[in-house]
Image 1 (tube, helix red, strand yellow):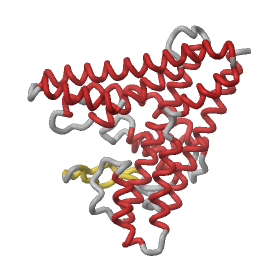
Image 2 (tube, helix red, strand yellow):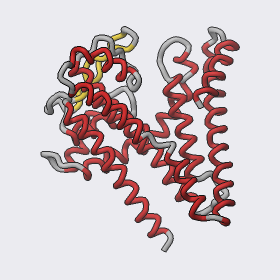
Image 3 (cartoon, helix red, strand yellow):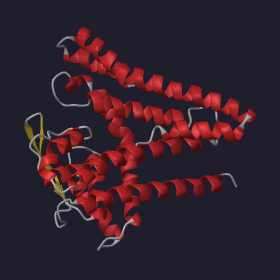
Image 4 (tube, helix red, strand yellow):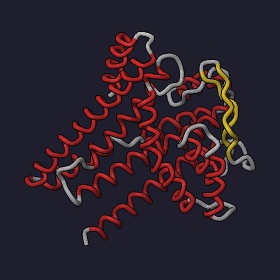
Length: 308
């Protein structure tokens, strides 16, 4: 997906030059092309799976499950965050700062050159929260929806096709969805599509995560406070994602960030809680895993009920 996006980006910029209108059109064409090809590829693999299932159902299901799992970022997200935490846990933290910043730069968009340990932990907590929704729960939602649709008609796009459609929109947003230079227009369509596809999953996480954690306040107050803090963010989804993890993990998020030298002030979330530390970041990862298992269990029970 990344290779195709990069190629189409160069073509679109070469044709559009400085024309905002042409960049908008080019971005829309890139989004449609990559999303369509990704969904089509998933749909073709689904056809092959259904044919193979007739001859060898166990083997085909294992292969299909393996391919589906490639759409989830659980392992890579945990690995990246834990590498940072393990470096912070070492005694000579000052000697590890440059390595810490380098590893952090791979998973966040903010400037990391001047971040101290506290800011690195805050960035880790925020990216763990936001990317849990983008990398785990949003693709899971589209997999579940595709699987349910399959129960009615297996000729239509199913779990893999819909998961890859989402991953395509997410990848486009990651590569082009920046409000700067030509990308402000070229990445517009992809960014809006990604916002749309994460809108429902982020709100389901808002409602379900408080049931998987122990807090000092009630579940419904946690949901309400997370919503009130989260909607202050400019993003329709990332603020809500960060807020519900902040309240459930008991950690304050938000503050001043720098992006390519430009200051951006993010609203403070869960301001009555302490700043991020190693334990609170680990708790976010643990909550993410717990909620992922809860979603899968609920889905299995629901599918069993549908098939009764």
